[in-house]
Image (cartoon, rainbow, N blue to C red; front, side):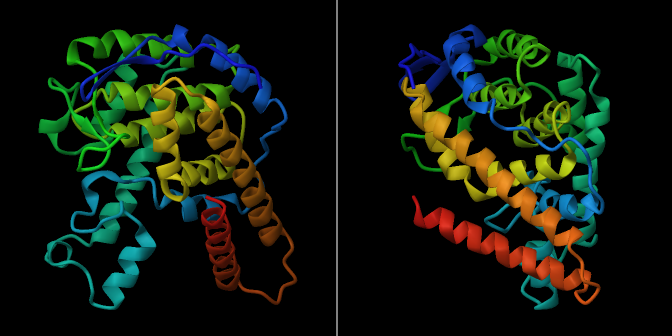
Length: 308
């Protein structure tokens, strides 16, 4: 792996001002070379929707589940409800919280239809409005936001100045609309740059995940996409933040390692779930298959944690 010059932005105090995409030129080439070996699955193999829904339950995120430390997870909510352990803020809700989660997930999926063939600034605004129901939180932020943990640490920072948002977003859109760049490379750079810009008042994570779904749809089926998103958001979110921090400090090794691990894990998990559903001996019910799959994921997570 050759050394590259990397300067993705400027840190002043707790504020990080990202540079434009051209600062990634050498890293984009490095990522492209590293990702060549991955021939992602393009053909959807039934019953693919079952597995997609299993993973997509994590994607709604945001403020839907107040009172819980984790983002919305339909299975967790149903379990808490059956055990009468829902937080008071949720148990008093007039509308069933699981219905809200399902609707939010559907909003995320439907929001992809708002994108033009060439994604525009207005498309991003429409997607944000579609997934954030509080009208007061619609649109581009007007002040600097704090990103990261609640307490200050190395991976936390203030986002760029609001006056820089439109310029940086338009620059990012030119990059992700470039048909000559591998979609996987687009996603890796997008995840970093979108986090640095943090353009909206709310729903930044949701819009980012919708963008990832849209970009990867060029290259692979929805099962693989939902598995990869699961890795980014749930399984290795801390590792992602840490690799982005290192990238801000000029080191790209951890960033490359993160995405290589992400693709390997997604490949393994994709093959497992496809084999699980295709190799049906007519003696094992769908429910048992899901239990087996859930167990497999827990073991994968255990093995992943032990290697940290």
